[in-house]
Image (cartoon, rainbow, N blue to C red):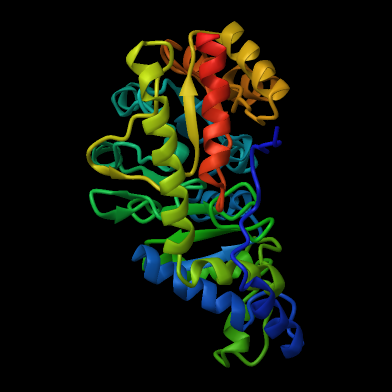
Length: 378
């Protein structure tokens, strides 16, 4: 019996050549030639006006919170079913987090619950594109426009995903990507901010460079650089960017491979779904996803716990995902749940993620699927 880990960081084979290029150039710190190549490639992949590589998606979210001018006492609306960084970025600016319920089909924020959560203190909406499947962005953008709110897309899982032909991260004021080792494209730790407002780009460069106008200095636009704004050290190493660039130089290499694995899972597990023993992921008609993850939904928390244990005994690394933030100590301290928690907790307790990574073989998928069938039919 082979062990099937939950995740294997992507490696396509050209990473070492790009790493060697950076080492030979003796330019290792951030914002060098390789960083710029990644920025430009992301702009071409997404159609974003500007893209800036950061040290993480957390960093990108923190930058977006500053650029959105979040102030103490402001309120920011988001789903509770997300990673802590989505909320932390705004809590650090003094904001109160207002959580709303999710849709049970996509696990994304319920766009129909947002407007009821808006008050005169609301400053921004933060849709989270779970599993690389887009939120209902037309509705969200319309609400934001009518209430004069900023939209920050947490597209950590959404590289190479689209909504009505538009790349995730490019529809709001700002979009945030992750290139953590668990993501489709990885530099170990890393991220990017997409800036869809021309006026914000210059300030974004300053925030990313510790609040200095150093980027202007290197371009010869000023004769010296100085501290001009708030900021932090959000520049990614050239070495990390080299690893990433190897993978995004032709993003379809990884994307096509992951989609093939995702489709194998879907087809193989459909009989269990037809018997209503499990539920499979839902991809709305307007969405093109990137196979970031394959999850199933089981009956309840007890069944999920038993299935995880059963799969582990058979060498399969399956895991659950987020604990809803509004149930956490910090979530209760810094936020409030608006309306009724109909689906957030219930659906989060049913969701189980199966192994999926670049290069996963059909035989490995078959082993996972057989173990799931054994649990339900054995």
